[in-house]
Length: 53
Image (cartoon, rainbow, N blue to C red):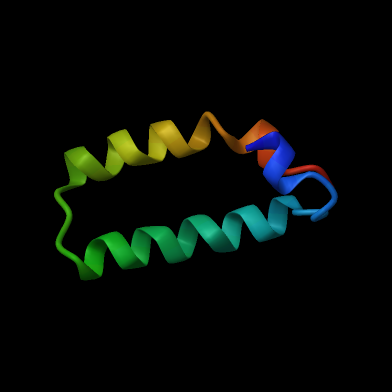
């Protein structure tokens, strides 16, 4: 992830927008909350490799 996103200057604000859209999409697809939590935990672990600005 780090190599893919380096130089993109993804900010905390960008990250927050992404998470909001991800939650909205998972809700629209009726993904169970338990699975949403697991996905959020996994994606959250990638944040330090993605957010740089």
